Image (cartoon, rainbow, N blue to C red; front, side):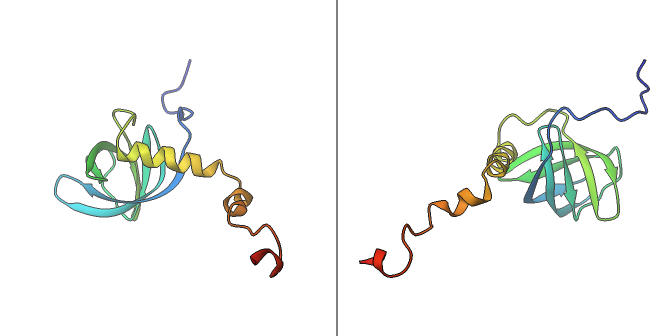
Length: 122
């Protein structure tokens, strides 16, 4: 039988991102930055609210609802009650995942000159 105190494995892969957001709690708006995102939740640096509190994450003109799962002085982890399936946060997540699949050598491949020196620049 599963012990309810044992952390369960994540269903979604976490992806590193850098997204400036505004977090709306019960009494305040706090600026923060999402640094870790999945369809089911996020880590927000620079913002902190009490664990188990509800909040709104404002990004790209849209609001995403969340519940604070853990909180430290300068960051917190939130869970989305409904998994991301569309909207600006979902688009940013998909974009970050696609970018992480590109090899670093491929980024510069298209801008690299075909020849070396002046001969190729007629």
